[in-house]
Image (cartoon, rainbow, N blue to C red; front, side, top):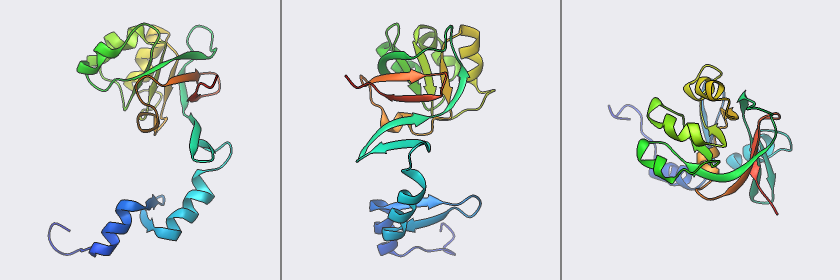
Length: 169
């Protein structure tokens, strides 16, 4: 696009902004409109698949357990989105630290977290290694946690089964 060899027409850009899905293993094709809705229906919003959806409200997200913590039991708490050292002041002991990925700059917040949840990361990621050292329950590779959850949301993290969900009364 920068070199002028590829152009996308304005109508296509408008469609992509309002309703689109990037899908595919290698080609990453962009679908819009009805095709996008069909892909979402078929692949994303399914019982027991990444996201469990009830109407328009997502109920849980799955990830990979990096650390069970002391017991592997559920951890309930309030979400605090922490992506930088400036965000650490929001944390109080027992809060659920939700981050795109962790870095050494936010270890202080990780030490007081009731659980750690990251969008990205594998079993050898910073969050995984530090959580095991601290023995704090940790889910990695949750993908959409920072998009779905907001500061102050009451959640339940289940490290034994690898999910985080809204806490309902």
